[in-house]
Image (cartoon, rainbow, N blue to C red; front, side, top):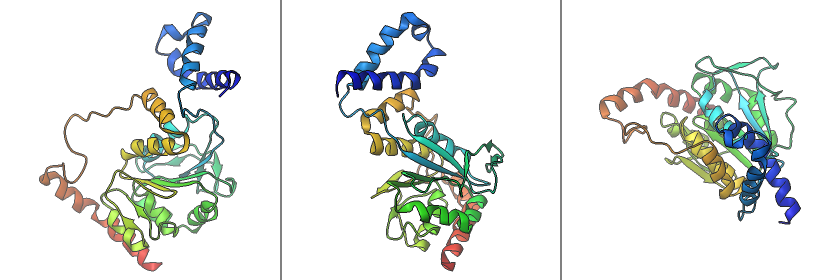
Length: 278
């Protein structure tokens, strides 16, 4: 990397992080901070395998009833990838805000029909009833199958993997999902794998909800290298320290885990029924 390229990369990264730092430290405010900032960014850009720039086309599906955190967590990291274009793709007929399963509405940027065919990264978030509906929506499934061959990465978080499976993309592939539905993957020919992030070739799937952050960092590392992923990890101050043990069936007390399994058991049953139709 020559000096000019390093400077251009540094200035590009500066544009990304400037709003973050401007709100948090006077050290980065005003013209006086520019030399310090530029020097720090030059040094950062010179880190081995630190790839700032790319031209990825990323498509993140929105459908009624999706789980917001499945989408928003990865979007934070994908949206920070310099040069990447992130499309929020709605499976509705217009660009009306799409409501999540808890009522949080997200504004899409493009419809399924208008989304570019040559997408580098496809992403499906999960949910419950909304996901089951998306699994049987021909427009949604066609969206994935028509772009799968070109895509470098085909990805999901939580029960979003069931949408990929319903589209016929996970046959013979190792994949994960939310614990309540992971067993249903087998009905579509996938290989259920109980890990937080599972990579099988160009397929990268994340487990339930909060695993979307781990998943997204794994995707960024695959696309841009670990040093860049580490920078975004620090920018987001991602260093989880839950207040108590839990978050999995194995680490949650049985008196809580077992009733919760019963409450969500219908998701896997319904998903398996959809798999049985195929």
